Length: 230
Image (cartoon, rainbow, N blue to C red; front, side, top):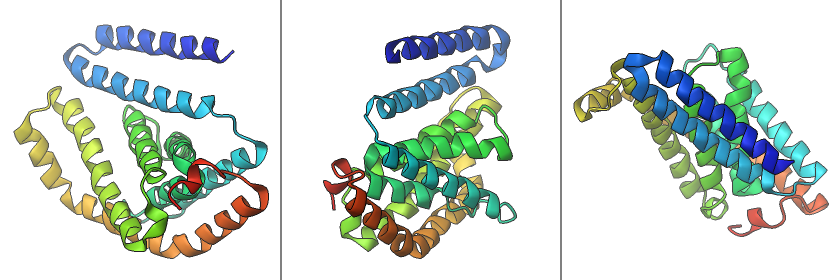
C-alpha cells in the first residue's frame, strides 16, 4: 500500500511537471523549481510515513500542528510575527527530527487553508519541514542560547528560501543581482521573522517543553530519536 502511494504521488508530480511545462510557457523555470520543492516535500513526508508511530506520538504531533496553525491565525493582525517556526523547532527538539519535520510540513499545508494556498506553499512546507528536521539533529536541548540562535537563524533561512521563489516567479531566472535586491528589500521582514522566533521560543520553551518531557517520560513517546541529543 505504501509503495502504491509513492507511485501515485510520483505520477501526480510528473503530471504537474508536464502540465506546467506546457501551460506556463515564459515561467517554465519557476514552475520546475516549484516542482522540485514539491518533490522535496513528498520525500520528507515519505520518510515520516515510513516510521512506525504509535497513537500517542501521532496525537502529540497533531496537537503541536494545531498549536502552530492556531498561533499563526491568532497573530494574523501582526504581519510576519508568528509562532509557527518556534513550535516547529520545539517539535523537532522534543519529538525528534521526523516529528519536527511532520509538524513543519503540515503546519504550512493546513494553515494555508486559511491564509491562502498557492505556488508558494511547497516552499513553505519544505522550509519548515527542514527546520523541524534539523532541530531534532542538533543538540538544542542542551543550551538555551544555542536554541535561540537556531531560532533566529531559522527566520533568516526561511526568508531566504521564500526570496528564491519570489525572484523566480517574477523574473523566471535567478540572477544574483535580482536575488540580492530581493533579499535587501525583504530585510525588515527577515528581521521580524528572526526576532519573533526568539521571542516565541523564550515564551514557549519552558511551559511547552516541560509538558512534552512529562508526556514522553510517562508514555514513552519519542523515546528514541528525541533523546539522542538531550
